[in-house]
Image 1 (cartoon, rainbow, N blue to C red):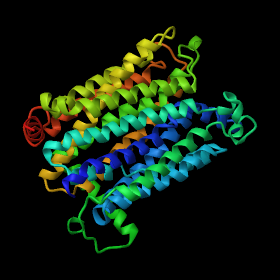
Image 2: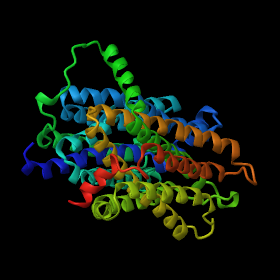
Image 3: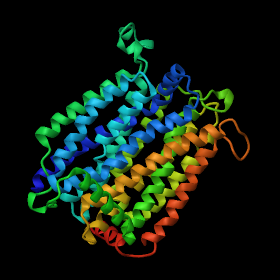
Length: 449
């Protein structure tokens, strides 16, 4: 791809990834309320379990389909795979907003996750058009798209929830019957706009002569081969260890996704914060905005000064500290303390994500592994972390919310911090902290840029 086209291409890719994250984040502020409404109609009491299951369903689809999309992009190119994901976004946002039962909502989120399992392809796209000196900065751009999407998504989800109760314009309309359709419809429109832009402005990054040739065309045999290859990736000494680091980080981080709003919506009399959908959306917008600043503006300079390996290590510890502090935010006047805690979490995540992606990408290149395959395996195992994270969080919450002492509603958040510690110590197996190969070669190339 000509260098002159890369700035515009990165901008289009930025939009595609941002829309993906809007789809993931838009449900976070209202999901617990939505599940509560649907569960009350069906006589279901295990709210924590269903919140976790709904989030896990989205990630389960990503876990199943990430290797498929990653390997498919190695064969047919990145562009058609990315656009397929946008089509799925457009359709399943609306279906989710129209859901009238728990299982209908679950099916819609699962299908959305299946079509959104192409983040690995976006990272492979960056790898196609980047050298080691620009890798961290460009992965940071994708991270900034995550952050901005995670800002816009929850904000839309919170501010546009239950419009019939807030604005006369929506009274006695479909939005009265389906109070969470409006934010989903807004996200669907954004996805359609992004698809149109991609059709006309997103070029292909993988030349035909560099694509993987596969003679077997049976989709089931291809899928089986992909998972066999993913297992081979996880057994690679350095790459495999790095994927385990990412798994435990995501596991701890996504436990918070399930239990955070269960905690904030709880009344202050019970030790919660008494937040509404809009309050939750604004808090997650703070997380996303801080991520945009770190990954979009600061990551290049921080990488040059400290190196990707140091930022990776520091990000894990800071994020873990913030997660463990959430349940200790005071219920009276919580905003300033909670914002400070969430800035810790988003700063840690903002340092971890681009540094992790840059190191893993460079490892794949130096070891001669197919980049789409490695990123597909990484996203697949990351999605597995996003499956067990919300499920663990929901189950732990249901089991401990009414307890006091060492086991209490704070337990799930303390578990998040513990998993971050595990991820930190797993870095040593990947030779990131003490060994100079291969991560330090990446850091050196960035520092000498």
